[in-house]
Length: 192
Ligand SMILES: Cc1cc2nc3c(=O)[nH]c(=O)nc-3n(C[C@H](O)[C@H](O)[C@H](O)COP(=O)(O)O)c2cc1C
Image (tube, rainbow, N blue to C red; front, top):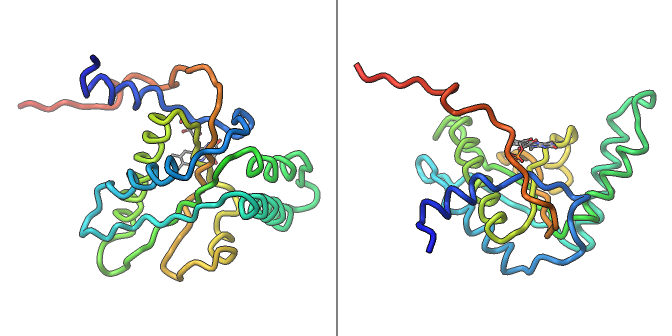
């Protein structure tokens, strides 16, 4: 039997960003999505502000959101730079995904610095990514150029900011190695 550390390391190292064109049409059961969200809720959080906020989009809402992402792209792109391919891919990505989770953080100015809220929120997203990997669900964190327009579309609270989208779907991708330089290049040990 694998030890806990072997299982944990394997999930951490195996997790890759998996993109919507690789997703199969198989729907992710709601229980799996709830499990992924539950993991987010265990992230560390200074002063227990628990800043992570999520909007789960499925079915028709997900399709409408894809259309909105494409519309926003067209709206904010000068005609000379507009690419029909990019427009179409924004619609397709939402349709290819079984679920899209809008990743938001609720900020508490005056209580703790914004960077700490964003750090806690990012820990929550990583918990989601690792849980998705353990459930053999492909996922990736997307940060579209239209992100600042999303709070209005979702009628979010004034103290909430959107920090991206989490696309998810089952997939048949072969495992691939992470592209990382050695950790030793990024660490200084000081002992005396
Ligand atoms: C905050 C954040 C935003 C990201 N935004 C995008 C994005 O907009 N488009 C994209 O293709 N990948 C995005 N990614 C995924 C990275 O490209 C990916 O993590 C990186 O290539 C390493 O690959 P891996 O996740 O498979 O290890 C984002 C990742 C993070 C953490």
